[in-house]
Picture 1 (cartoon, rainbow, N blue to C red):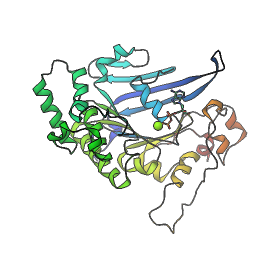
Picture 2 (picture 1 turned 60 degrees about the horizontal axis):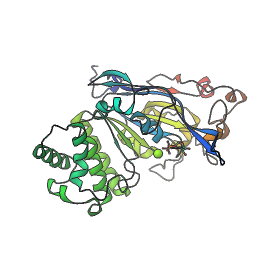
Picture 3 (picture 1 turned 90 degrees about the horizontal axis):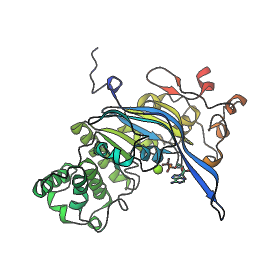
Picture 4 (picture 1 turned 180 degrees about the vertical axis):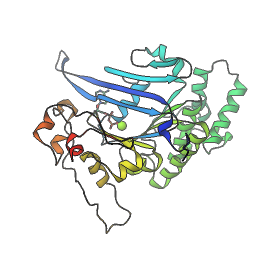
Length: 341
Ligand SMILES: Nc1ncnc2c1ncn2[C@@H]1O[C@H](COP(=O)(O)OP(=O)(O)O)[C@@H](O)[C@H]1O
Ligand SMILES: [Mg+2]
């Protein structure tokens, strides 16, 4: 059977690739602010985003999802590794060694939608000014009239109206504010959108509307999404593939339906066990319940970061960080124990 680019994202080309990305934050303490340690927020993560896909990035709070997203546009400084981006303007470049000003021409191609639509919009600016701001930065030659028209067009694209450009964020509901955030992100015609828990702050009844909007916009503009969520049930429907992080490491990655139906890593199984089944009388056959909290990223366990909470852990798990092993069907798992069976 013939496969097309649309239905089979495995045929698409790579838009962005993390190679062993590390982001460590130094911790200073005492009167002399001596460096006493570091938070290994992202600790050697490798995966790629394919053009036109949505990759869901999931894991418990604090596992390094936001830091991974922010590293792309240098809202945090990478400490190691590479972030290869296939830029329309500059060709294939490693974003890690670039300075912010070197990054500026590419920034129009990569935009971010933030978790909290209440704090990510400047309350003193009109919605029109908020959406126009990236245009002023990236298309300084654009005239006032043209910019106004583009802003009105963008607001309509996200389900608002051009007249609402004169209103202020406090006049909008949470869902509408997130639509404004999406319009601002789309202003520069980006190719990659990093959406950091874009619906977590919204009422459950509004979440589906915003997710549907994002899907429509993806189709219309050929967008690639890195869709961050702490909750698997949110990413299940929108994602083509899902990547699972734990304490700064990638544990498993694969097509959404494969990962959902056939999770291999004990941590992914635990995350999926936590998603309620539609029929409450049913329980999952191999349910794993997570005990306790993840350890602090200041004191990461040696070897596999998950071993201290893993029911299948063996002494060898303490030795080295397990590599991602190929499980077939475009699916990779960082657990040699489960792959042995
Ligand atoms: N600027 C920072 N300085 C120090 N530690 C940070 C900073 N930003 C994040 N962290 C720490 O890095 C870890 C990962 O954070 P984050 O990427 O926000 O996780 P997530 O988005 O998955 O909840 C957490 O332990 C967090 O406390
Ligand atoms: Mg986060």
